[in-house]
Image 1 (cartoon, one colour):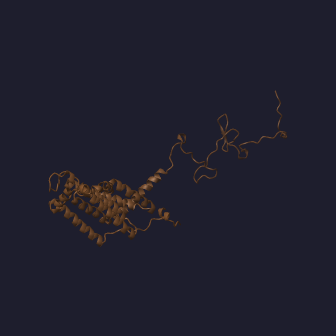
Image 2: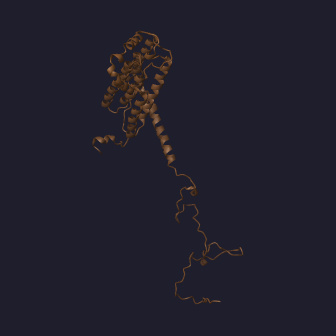
Length: 327
């Protein structure tokens, strides 16, 4: 057994026993409080309340003009909230974990979370149709139902889900604490960056944080589905691999495999042994066919061997043999 630091890179001999999170009372209470916060933000924007006024004040303040030195760095930092790059990075890490731990649960959990994110956030975006700060038409307006897709913030919700799934799938309490802090810092930073760049309203970011957190808190409800999907996917994989390993039935003339020769005396029970071809100098045990076409039964003692040995040079002739004379 390896004891160096690289031993953790080796594949585990068997799947580890991982405790799957459940919907405890604390998690249920957090889910309910986050859902209430989510609905409150939606109602505040629909009613064009003080939250919309705050959105306009922050937008007109133009943070990117107040602190222009941060613009170059934050243009790269906000990529941590884009779905494409972050999904590829997280999927690569969780794919390695799946291979190492002999389980598809990390990848299935990521896929489930991203699917829920696309459905829930996308439906609200298209349903409310809010325009972004750069496309606003009337000061003080909520800019709803105008054909936009900015509310809630997809960057923020994606940052919460993709980085938070690492903490959700952590196998130790210590790793879960560290990854929770890391994902929270990244999600808060990405949301604040979108407000700084002027691509989102402040209420968009608040709703994006709530949307991503709801998905992470509700993931235990989908664990039974993930548990049923894993053996089904593995069974399909095994059938596909077994189908590829079958020997092709190509004819021998077309380059197919030749059948293995069956040794004499090793024929299976109930099968006829291979018959030998009758050549010149071989007498059949059943009978011989004469030129007249009549089949005569040969005597058992008249059976000769397939080959008659030739007499060596200088040997004596049998007494009843006649010498061959020319002419």
